[in-house]
Amino acid sequence: MEQSTEQTTEILLCLSPVEVANLKEGINFFRNKSTGKDYILYKSKSRLRACKNVCKHQGGLFIKDIEDLAGRSVRCTKHNWKLDVSTMKYINPPESFCQDELVVEMDENNGLLLLELNPPNPWDSEPRSPEELDFGEVQITYLTHACMDLKLGDKRMVFDPWLIGPAFARGWWLLHEPPSDWLERLCQADLIYISHLHSDHLSYPTLKKLAGRRPDIPIYVGNTERPVFWNLNQSGVQLTNINVVPFGIWQQVDKNLRFMILMDGVHPEMDTCIIVEYKGHKILNTVDCTRPNGGRLPTKVALMMSDFAGGASGFPMTFSGGKFTEEWKAQFIKTERKKLLNYKAQLVKNLQPRIYCPFAGYFVESHPSDKYIKETNTKNDPNELNNLIKKNSDVITWTPRPGATLDLGRMLKDPTDSKGIIEPPEGTKIYKDSWDFEPYLEILNAAVGDEIFLHSSWIKEYFTWAGFKDYNLVVRMIETDEDFNPFPGGYDYLVDFLDLSFPKERPQREHPYEEIRSRVDVIRHVVKNGLLWDELYIGFQTRLQRDPDIYHHLNAKPHENFKNSLMNEKQHKNLSLHLEYRKLTAKRLCFMTSAMDKFYVAFVICVYSLHL
Ligand code: FES
Image 1: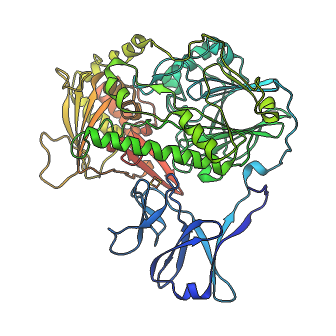
Image 2: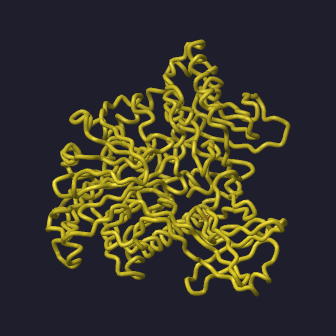
Image 3: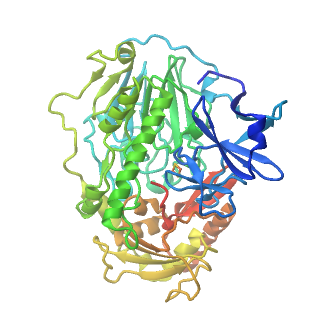
């Protein structure tokens, strides 16, 4: 991609007058033969609309949607998202995203031009030419999962420190044994970047250790709609130097070092990625972003790192009934992992970094009660991805082992330099073989006997606080033991979200129905602390059945949630419940996402069939 500090216009496709005359009403597919890129043009009586034939989810190709008799929508061949091309809005997931439109212009010969208006790339502002790096000047050390320790001249920066404890309640545990000096390394950091609020990136057990030594450590996060540190006070971790920075603007650290945080195109409300630049050399970390910065990224960076593994979702392994047989799930996982691998390989091929490192997928479901998930929720092998990348490009790849250090100056100068990557000393333990489960499970267990659960009135209180209603969905919630059998004395109740009632029996009307079994310790911990249901769902702490088998992506007005969360405080007092909900945090039960200028709330119980 060319460096540009001004908006540019690019002609993506030219249609001849004959092609224009032959345009049919409705959907027309085109390919630019010289670039191999695909486009969709929608013709109605009043106007022409056009877009790239690229799905917003993971770049899949759209084809005609044969189920749509009106001839207005197209279907993605990868995971079946659907786009109504007459409005340029996605209809599956419903009310979710808009497709970016191209400008359609008639030329002087009655041909058509499809134009893309490209705003300047923010990282191209005040461009810097790469300077030669001394050996040892820039060193990147892998610690665990998504955590990298970067030495950049005389500054140190750490990404996403998750070094101890579980993530997602008790579902995820570290695969790799972090280097023994990890806390020293964190304490020496000049800045820490935390990409988003998920607990494999925002790890309070880790931050608690760090805050004990350096409460003033400078932490940087993007200005996401769902703040990364939304429950800092509740966490009890004392951090006094959290900096929320705007997207797409260089943050100058010193004369050689700057960084820029960018948002994700699919989850802009919460996911971010980062470009770090030292002496003109860029390091791009796309973390967990599904479509980092909407697909616009710097090319030819010195080092790129991204997720690769998959498996970071309760879908489909926590589902049963209907099509969800073991064979179906196994086949689905196999196919989806392959798609993800190809998607990542294609991204790397397009961006042509000098060096690529797959990371942020090194977790394991190691608690014995999650044996089934551990055995079936297979993840991609980083070496397989790296081999795929090497087959299609001359990008150098790095499969990191904890404590391994990449010397950027050496690697850029000579990728065959044997000192370019220093592996951990012989005999270093790479994989964890034991985990300290007890203290973390005790915290969860403590919620089981909490007095707020003595009276069933908490159910109404809780769901009223969540503020999600006016939607035709009935959910049966069942508290269970470790093996998802009903917990003796546990709650088993229905919630009708149409009018937010709690009937004894399913209503007579037609309604989508979902049954959610949740481990009692985790659901009560989540309820008591007003946490996101991600803990349950992504952490594999639920088992789900639904009829019909559809994905609900729901919207609600944000002020409704704010109102409800405020109302809830009053109700707390009235009911003398000891729930310490914070104000204005309805986001804890709901996903609040923004797409374009609209707000969306997806209720997590309606869990993803498309979020893979
Ligand atoms: S890439 Fe289109 S639905 Fe996933």
